[in-house]
Length: 136
Image 1 (tube, rainbow, N blue to C red):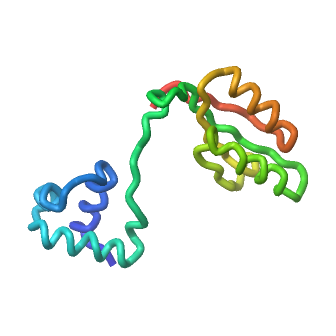
Image 2: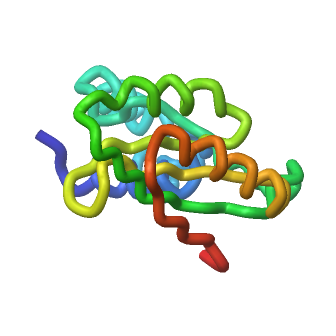
Image 3: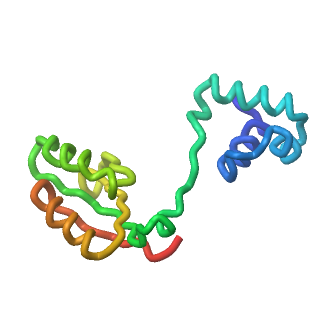
């Protein structure tokens, strides 16, 4: 399926997806065309699903990063899911999980006041436990 060079390519791209094929090739000891060919193969085989960026939310004014364990006692989750769809300014990811809770919600907020209002609105649809990120 994939060899050690492919694994190195994936490792390097996961650190910096903006590497040129020349720079990536230097890191994995291949020519740029050989590296590009391998990357295309990884994409075609569905191993690489896409490239993304990491946004500095603090510089955008979102200084609070929170994870919420969501607990829904009812079997119908649609009211919660509909609410979450309206909160795209704050919701980063909404993972359906097993274990503790029904969902793990990752959010960003510009202030404690906005977080508090979000939690009040959320509580109409689900119970939750909040964890605030204090460092990475």
